[in-house]
Image: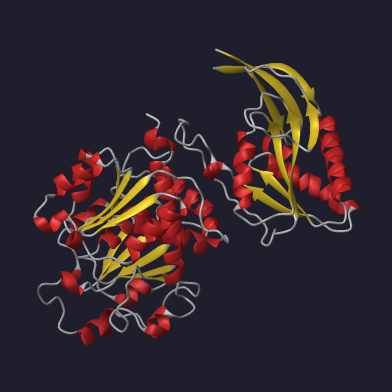
Length: 315
Length: 181
């Protein structure tokens, strides 16, 4: 049973809570393969998708997850809401709460925005990405994909390569994988490492490693996780050219050969083909990118079930 | 609240004997038609496996087996204190026009079976759904009855019928317990 009413990040989850989410997700995967892809579990519950940043994949995934569990799902994007009329985040939250929403899924460019909402609402808040802080459902779906392919989350070598500094996905994955004692290798150009990287390594010396060499990161890896170069967050130049970036940190078939023979290649999407990964790798036999998408629906169903089921309204 | 033993209802031999008899009754009532035995988590699952083995030895057609978790269909989800653990549901594909035997250990209020019927109907349109239970202890809250019953007993509200099966509990036995505060 989850200890909190909200899901704000991986950092504060115990390994037991993570396993409960993954086990529930595994049970719920079956619903998506039925002829009628719907169960009545969350009938009468209201789920609001509140996305202050562009997203197709995550928002759609939450919407499908909610609908497969029979919740009523409402999508709000800032362009069409009172946010464009100057309403503050806090007023928006209070309004949604007054409408008796049971769960609000929030994506916001400011780190900590979901945590602020969580304090002000009765509704369960799910963080769907806040700034460069956390993206917990992405790390959970990555973990489910890894566990189903590798049979474990422990003792693996996972290389996370690319734009670490802007990546909440990297941060959530580091928290999750090191909790289970897998070794995470962060690999990027120095300009794409977060400012507080030294502190992160210091806090987690045993399981978190840093390199600027892609060869070292990939060597004998069980999992290679490529990150998207987030051009939209880059106000200045972080590397000389896309071609040069690819030369040092792009994943092609030749580089994959350095990893274990049964390595899996992951990417949270959307992919910049030819920038961080070549098409023959993204669409090749090592790639589990589409498995990640399916796992995403199951993990989000599990979270909605665990946050909006019994626990949500029994008190 | 604690549970204390009131009396033992069945021993090892009686449990297996009852499962054998139920399997034979199911076979006699449905012989020649494609059968699917669907066990409800948790103890309906080993019951279904054992009954399928008995039927497979005698029937012309081996029955298919499925498992069903009813938690996604509960009517008390917002009222129970603990979030029920959802287990995997695995119903064979294409169960349209088959005869499905739904299997559970104890028939009590009928609410689990109501949920199971709703769940099954989401997988297609079966020719029939029949219910087999080890124990019918009365106290129905819904108009639901079993087709195949191991044993019918009268119970009090404060009693609990515990079916134990080797696969889950390490022994075959049935006990009637009494709640005491």
